[in-house]
Image 1 (tube, helix red, strand yellow):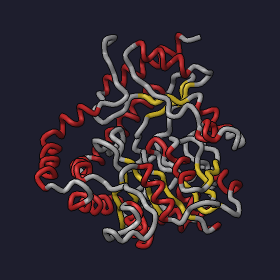
Image 2 (cartoon, helix red, strand yellow; image 1 turned 45 degrees about the vertical axis):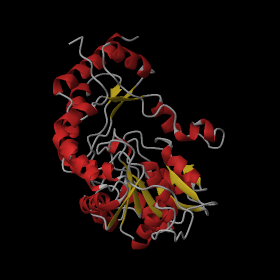
Image 3 (tube, one colour; image 1 turned 60 degrees about the vertical axis):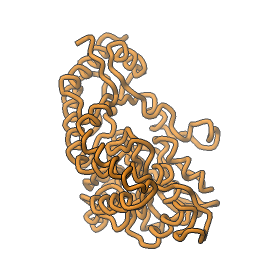
Image 4 (cartoon, helix red, strand yellow; image 1 turned 90 degrees about the vertical axis):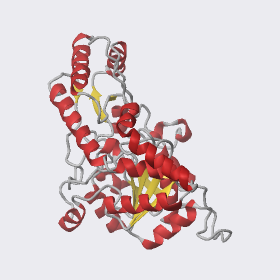
Length: 389
């Protein structure tokens, strides 16, 4: 199989499988002549709200806009602080900074890659107004512990669900020493990400588990007031034309994207189940490879990424080894957010995030990936670890 080329993601194959349905949905929008918001967006919002188990779902232009508008709808602004993880894509911290607030970083749990609840409380200060957990790689954060802290300190919670559409919280509480209130834990166990905090923010970037054919995002909430504010903010600060009540954004969801996403929504659970099956196979094959740490197969994890940790400083060499054999891989993320140039010198070290950023390697994963290719990737990694000095 030396001539096999294995991409990190293959969107063409998914499109071929859905081509007739996608084309019919697109043609329906073209025939309607309604391209911004409109009936397709309303139907998509209703279907997503039902899927997530939330009262409201508000379509916006992108996942980043979902975070920014979600923060503003929560009343977060200049002078406020929001605690989040350093180990995420920059949109997480950027959204906090862009509403005038300050991101404050609590380190991660290396086993889950998510923010460690044990480190959040020490970061809470008089200006803290919210916690923004990220369900990284599709793995739900320890929401029971986070919600308990938020309740105790009267903080808002905005979930960054960019990578976790379809993921369910299984009730785990790593990092809280089993001190979570049973009432809080039972109330959220089994719930979808985006339905537990005050706000959920989703991205439908094409590479996501539920991906559009362009930029698209969504805000979820059970709060009527937050939903109304979010709907105003996405359309220049007003629900009525020429009745602008506040400074808002041009962040409307396109009807074409909503129609495409409505088709794909019917398949998301099956796709996520296949991602879990692929992840399980990877983990079985790599479990005994020295120097490779596989991610936990936690219940509810939808594996937007399958990310291993390569120890002993060999990550980059392993990646090159795979590349030479036609296997793509990615590093999410080589530089934690608090170490990016935009925040240079502003934050103390988050030791675990710094260490993990030098170890992580994301392997090919998508629902259509063949098991024989999973086997080939795992064998190549094992060979690399044996042969590298």
